[in-house]
Image (tube, rainbow, N blue to C red):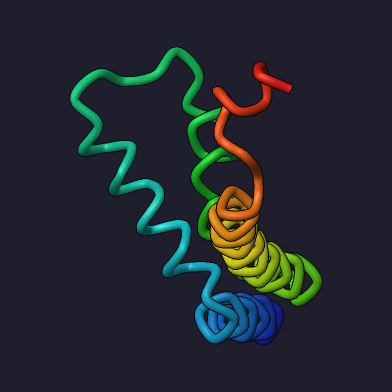
Length: 103
């Protein structure tokens, strides 16, 4: 009987560990999504792998790269706008196309 309680205690500790780390919640959400899927996928395992990967917390490096990409996009848009303004300014100093042919 003591062996049974020791095993039961270990299982309970492991269950609490999984619950505390969010594993049970994530698995439950993914399994519910699979259950609610109108057309069941050919491979339930691939479905789980794909959705668990999407639900996994972000790696700090990945998040830093996402922020860097967002910053670069903003800088790119600013450079495009500046380029557009500079081209307009430059066109003021260039002779019209008709004058170029007459020279």
